[in-house]
Structure formats: structure tokens, C-alpha cells
Amino acid sequence: MKIIVCIKQVPDTNEVRINKETGTLIRQGVPSIINPDDMNAVEQALKIKDTRDDVQVTILCMGPPQADVAVREAYAMGADEAILLSDRVFAGSDTWATATILAAAVKKIADYDIIFCGRQAIDGDTAQVGPEMAEFLGLPQVTYVQQLTISEDGSSVTVERATEDGHMVIEAPTPVLLTAIKELNEPRYPRMRGIYEAYESGDHIKFWTNADIDVDLTQIGVRNSPTNVKKSFVPDKSRTSVEITGTPVEIAGKLIHEISNMDSVMIIGRDAT
Picture 1 (cartoon, rainbow, N blue to C red):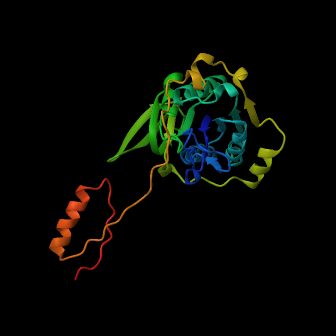
Picture 2: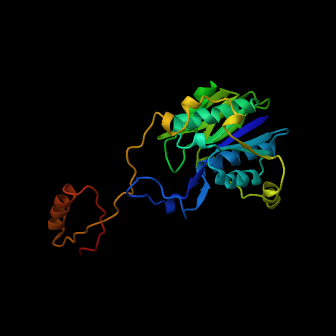
Picture 3: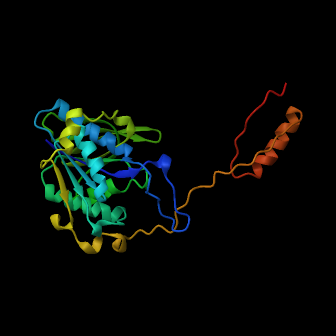
């Protein structure tokens, strides 16, 4: 069984800053991490490898050259090989263009049974790349996977898909694309030997450019992306407070009046007795 796991290097959202003039992310000095949902995708692939014979796990990532750190970290967790897609012509690609590039890379890999993606990336929160890849590749897809069982012969998967009010149980044939959520598992730490292997010379870490995949250049990059972000900004976190005093009846009346004139409110109660 062969498994491909798509990951993305993202800025740690706890440290995100935005240039007020350009509306773009300030990446300088901001730590980068593997997207959390993608870590669950990697872990699930490795859990399958732990329990089944002849499983090969390939990490696939698109990003700038510095994303090789994320690729090597995922490899060090226990994958068999890792591929970083990095080229200037990929820069600025939206979800459609990104999925186009990743799908082209998957077609080059060719032999696979399961593609795992994270549900969504914390820097964009679109949850679009995985499903778009499935469409481009003509694959069945199941999103929001919180539990997974694979048939003994690997010909199908049974998935518990999380919904807002419960879950759905879905069976799908392989090859299939699945998107993982945090409830699926607890990601492991990279292995010490894996870290060593990830940084030593060898062919287990590969670097592909546009020349290595068959992709239509008119469908990728910032100029060919159908989605344009008009504005990005950090929400205003300023707060105002009003202290309400009086009898319980008076407080209730004043509180209703204040709430009706506020966009949002946080109530801190005191003992009125």
C-alpha cells in the first residue's frame, strides 16, 4: 500500500503580524510550523504503516525553499521519502492553483492508494485544497475524518466523518483522498534517527520544480489564480467596560439596555446580595 501525505508549512498563528499598509503577512521573525491538521494526516499514515506490511509513505509539500524544514520534520516522524515542490512560478498561488500543482505532482508519483491532507491550513482556513485535488485527480473523497478503518485487502476504507451534530459512516473505494482533523489521532514526535537521516545526504528528500511536473503554467501562480484577497487585517481587540449598579431589577434593565447597544459583550458578575 502506498500513501501520499500533503503538508504545508504555515506561520505560527499565535505570532502572526500583518503589514497595515500592504495587508500582507509579516513573515520575518515569525516561527513556522507544520500545519496542525497536516500533522494528524502524517500520523494516520504512519499508524497504517505501523500495523500493515509493505506500506510506503511519501510526504508532499509545496512551498518556498525554507519549507524543507517542515518536509524533513515530517520525514523524521517515520515517512519513507519526502518531496518539496518549490519554484518561483508557484508563488502566490491560491487554493485552485495550489491544488493544480499538487495534483500534477501526485500524477507524477502515479502509484498510490490513499492521499491524506489536513482538513484546512491555519493561515487560510479555506479547507479547499484537498477536495480540489480530489476533483482534479478524479478521486472519491471524504473530509473531516475522525476515525478510519481499511479493509484487509486495501481495496476500500470505512470512515467516520465528523459533522456539526454527530458523525457519518462512509465507505469508499481506494484510491481515495481523505482530510484529517485533530480528533483522528495524537501526532508522534520525530525519531532521533529520523532527524539524523533527514539531514544527511541521500535521495530520500527530493526537490522538484516546475520542470519536474507536467502542469499548465496558465493555471498557476499569483497572476493566474482566480481568487484575489482584497484586504487582510488584524481584528481590533480594544474593549470598553460599563459598571452597572443598583437593585437586581435595576441591574437587569440597565444590562438589557447596554447589550442592545453593543456589538459584543462580556459579562463579569458580582454578588448582588
